[in-house]
Image (cartoon, rainbow, N blue to C red; front, side, top):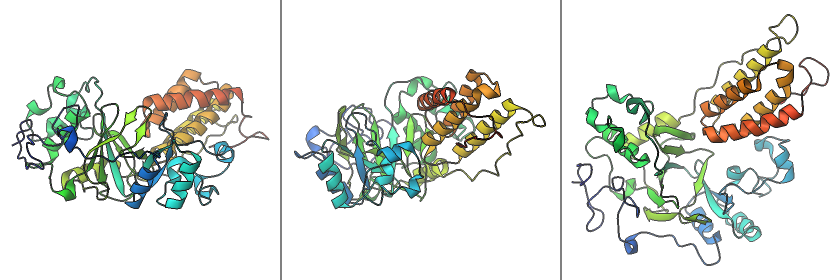
Length: 394
């Protein structure tokens, strides 16, 4: 029996007394001695060998900045955004433009990238690699005020046939590990975490104390889902990425604790169902709302800009990638029309941020994108719609 959750435990190493996801220790959910922990060593000549090793196992990799952990900068043409990503000539030419979209398993291309940027850190594109990353935050934070609905979004715990004692006490929930453990208790049955190799994820300890769980994707075409599976648990899938297991960034090493990068395990059936439920792309939206006439017969400039924002928000809600760029374009257009519309800047800002967060972007990121793009648009007013010279942005 696991000494923490009380469910059956099949040890995978001598002395194991807790399930991998039940241990709150700083050294990993499987509290092995340091000498027993699996490691992928970062080689003396930098990250290129790690990138090549992972690519050899089918992990699609691309270079990231070792300090910001973001994709390396696009070329000037791609930064200008004059073409769609799908039509970009840089990708077939082997350049790293558009970040995760450039991810590859081609060893020649990987070697060329790291020859040009030897300090780059490998990132892994989840979808092309056939993987899903569960990113479990272990930072201390206040749990949701309504634990019945907030700990496991989409599941009303008050209506579930589980003891109220499992979730009612907010003080029991310190971070994402506790929320994921609760999900296992609610959906996983008596043996939620199979211990056979076919179901073992690649478990990584992040420099900040979090955990990355790399699993085989349970379904194709999944999307990113931030906090929708459980409180402080994000799903990275599709055109989203994670730091490669074993990579070293300016903030520290992404230490592999267990699992096999050559054969990441499958999710247990209950977890696969839950991930598929929350990470399946939303249905295509209905036909866009027609823009009202900006002239005297319409409802006026304010109604026109409001509909532009609403239509942009509907587009964002159905997107699985490209949301940051789309939100930036929408905010820029709104800024260009702001003075003409007569709407208060605070109201437009609020509506734009709401559109970004509703699409799955973190609030802080949506706020930053809107603030910058809206300011650029305000500085470059657009002609009134319907007048000669109007430029369409979204």
